[in-house]
Picture 1 (cartoon, rainbow, N blue to C red):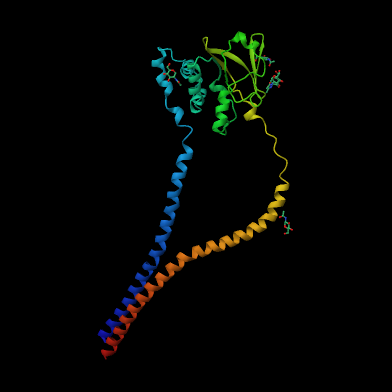
Picture 2 (spheres, rainbow, N blue to C red):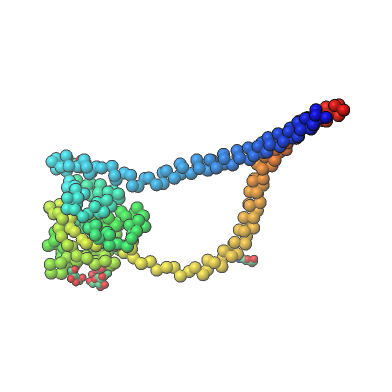
Length: 299
Ligand SMILES: *[C@@H]1O[C@H](CO)[C@@H](O)[C@H](O)[C@H]1NC(C)=O
Ligand SMILES: *[C@@H]1O[C@H](CO)[C@@H](O)[C@H](O)[C@H]1NC(C)=O
Ligand SMILES: *[C@@H]1O[C@H](CO)[C@@H](O)[C@H](O)[C@H]1NC(C)=O
Ligand SMILES: *[C@@H]1O[C@H](CO)[C@@H](O)[C@H](O)[C@H]1NC(C)=O
Ligand SMILES: *[C@@H]1O[C@H](CO)[C@@H](O)[C@H](O)[C@H]1NC(C)=O
């Protein structure tokens, strides 16, 4: 009797063993494919991100302006950034000059003996802008904005009244980027069509370059003009309702085809599980049969 009891408990033990191992076997194949799927798209994303974020901001920060001072003795151009740095309170404009590479363009123009006038807005002028104004601009718009602050000739304070409006700037054209300068008594007034300001000081002047301080950022119409919103959203919703019915039918067909793709790995997992179950099942049946024979034989 004690031997038969031991055999019964042995066969139960074997069943228990089969069930626990069967459960772990069923879990492991299901986890493996989901892991490899999660890794694959992550790898695919990283190379596409890298090139888009870098190209524009990097080149200008390569410090050609720091190298200029030693050459200055050899008749190099005036270092505009350095002049502005020395004057103080122009750090935002300096940063814009460099990040847009307009600083390099200025250096080139001064190198070939062209003359320039620069309206330099103070840090206070930039902080008076609506929050995020610069961040919403594209790289090209930032370049245009900076070039709008530069006239392609050196204009002394006395000579502003000789200019005819709109004044030509280094921005692409005077239609999109008009700038009016008017002399009123001791004031040199500047109007962009969006902001009015006055030259509030001379930062630097020689026979090739003049830098004037302005207390407002000169916002050009070409970038900051209030845009009238198009009044034609009504025809668009009509068509999509017709198109959406046809596109929804195509989307259901595509979703059904994608569901068959989803099914195939699941079916493969099912098959492997069934295989392991039958293999383990056959083993446990054999153990059970042997156990039963031994159990019956003990009588
Ligand atoms: C300007 O000229 C100086 C020498 O006169 C030179 O070292 C410098 O590279 C030039 N800069 C540019 C932007 O051409
Ligand atoms: C020119 O600027 C001065 C100082 O800001 C101002 O008093 C004057 O009204 C301006 N003139 C015009 C025509 O805007
Ligand atoms: C500039 O002046 C011209 C002519 O005086 C005028 O037609 C134009 O509206 C002015 N534009 C701006 C932005 O002040
Ligand atoms: C700029 O000044 C002109 C007159 O010179 C005026 O008509 C216009 O409204 C002013 N614009 C702003 C934004 O102050
Ligand atoms: C919209 O659908 C109707 C019937 O479903 C059809 O007669 C009509 O030509 C469709 N219009 C367009 C623009 O596809």
